Length: 383
Image (cartoon, rainbow, N blue to C red; front, top):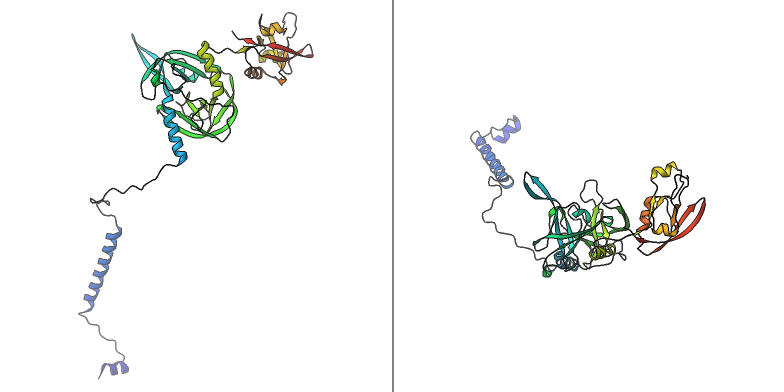
């Protein structure tokens, strides 16, 4: 009987080849294992961690020339850096009979002229036993003179350095600054010499309080990073001219938070000139002592500033202004305006006086016994 016939009639199952079946399975398993091994070898990290002893350095991609604005900034930095100095405020530390100088703090400054005058902030030099000025070439000099004007947070110190090492910083004007123009700061934040940061003029005519608790008006606000150690350094415009002295930051942490302030260069020029000429800044005075806030409240002064006393032979005395007579229970004149500008508090009067010079004549609006009067007063130098 043929196979076909048995299958047709009885439908029996064909018998497998008992000798070929295990060999085929083994071959299949080997193929799978080899394939898996190849995949693992290709994708699994090797024991040498990707090391290749034949590796060579990559070729550097050609950059091409710097952009024009980059070239301008590089040149500005290279030109300005020799004018910027590092200032160390040194204090005496006593150990038995030994005296050792230790850094109390540090700041920045800049060369004003070739006579050795260095300009910085008052708070950088405050309470120093000695001052060390380090030029951009790392040569060091001791300050021989220090003149300060705390009301504007400005100081001038002198060093005996060769003229060849002193490069005065170019001076610019601050009255024509525009919000949005470029601003550059060079200084020594955290002791890192020659650091450059950039930003813009963020706002103008800000008001801050000086170290002597006086109001400083017309202050420049900038977004250029200012950190501890920058104080006293230059704020430059895009032409590399000094337009301000970096003086303070507004930050809850003490580090830069996007808002920094600088004393305008026009104020710096005026104050530094007086300090170099006279060793002090002469400011005008009215010659009056004002009533305290408590006295003003007790006397129920509705508005204005009560004159408590008038300094003899002062501008106020010569103009006939009157002080308060306690024995006669007579109120003094109440200042309510200065050149038509309303005065409501002593702080406003102090701020208004910042805009005048010795010799100016100012019209003082007063209330005297219920009547308004206008009194011209010629200002004299404060003693």
